[in-house]
Each structure stands twice: as C-alpha cells, then as structure tokens.
Length: 254
Image 1: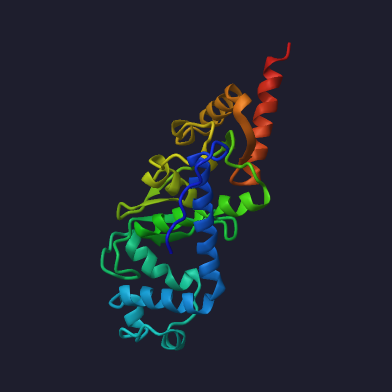
Image 2: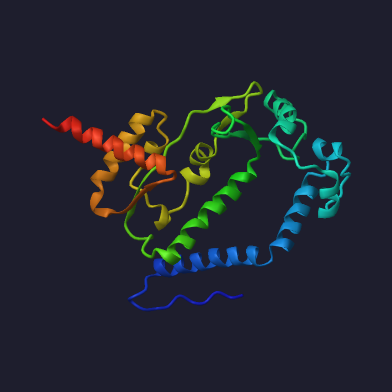
C-alpha cells in the first residue's frame, strides 16, 4: 500500500507527520497480529520449530523435524523450570551444543526471585533483543491514543540497572531491563520524542544506585521547565525517587 504524501502546510511539521505515520504503522501492526491470532501463532510456531529442528531438546521428545502444531502438542510436554534446569545448567557451565536453541546463547536473563526466593536463569539469544525493542516501541503509540501530548517536552523517568553476574561458562546473567539498557538498542537508539528523557544514558547506566538516583534527580530538576511527565518502569522505583527527594530536602533544612 503506497504511503500518502506529507501535508504541506505550516500547522503540521514534517516531524509531527512522521510521528503520526509511525504511530499508525505500530497500531496497524498490532491490529494485524491480533485480528487472526490462531494463524499467527501457527506461523510463528512453525518458524521456531523449523529454525530449531536439530536441537537436542526437541529431538529428545521425538519431534524429528515436524513443524505443525498438532504434532508439537502431542510430543512435547508442558514443563516447569525445574524440568529444564539440567539443560540450563549445562549451558551455564559452558556447553555450547544446540541444547535448547540452534542459535548461540548470548546471555541469561534472571528472574526477580520473589516467587521461590532464588533467581532463575533464562537463556536468550541475540535476536531476542530486537523483538524486545519492537515490543517496547508499541507501548507509547497505544498510550497516545488515550493520553495525547506524550510526544511533547521531556520525560523525567527514573531508570536503573541492577547487578549482574557471570556463569561458570562465562555468560552474563542479569535482569531483563538491565540487559536492554546496556544493549545498543537502547544506548544507540535514534531520537524519539516519546523517549526524550531528562536522564542521560550515563546516569541510567551508573552501577551505583545512589549516584544514579542523585544524578537523574539533579538532571530532572535542572530541566524542570521542559518536564511534562514523570514516572518509572515500576511503581516501586517512582516511590523510591519520591522518598529520595524528600530526604534530600530534609538535609537542606536548617
């Protein structure tokens, strides 16, 4: 379908037009993949099974190259983390054979550990970062339908990284958001009015949580005339910022 030409008038800038078109494409993508989810799921499953036809886990269950949903559901059981733990441990210890994926495992994503008291390791591949970036890019166009003006001014958002570790095999293990913030998808992202933050990347990527909070707060206050929205990924992070600000104010009181 050919794209319409940008309107040529003073009231609509090219930037506004491009953003509107970008939002339309994002919303249309959501519409396309959700209007017929059964077909989309069949296609994606087939692609996954085709790409991973020779992995040990699928062959162990006798899939033998089948890519249809019916055979997959019949042969491959629903499992828990514990069922896969031995395979995950092998990968963590440095086994590079195609155990769970035909693609090389690039790192481990870690769970919060709140459910069982211990963080779980979830192997991931490099391509997954692109899919995560796509998902994040769909959030603001949806929100903009109900809260207009999110592309104006700056956002004072408090974003943090957490500590990471290395497995015996040398792979990095870290939380999902830390993985994203440290990736080129975030650090080298093109300008986007929706992610026009007051916090420079250096303040977000600071490993010292106190210094990170202090510098992000300072940058946000310095640019207060441009700030039109505030927030954090998790409500707990925003509450921490409020408490931090209160304590900072108290330290200035005589």
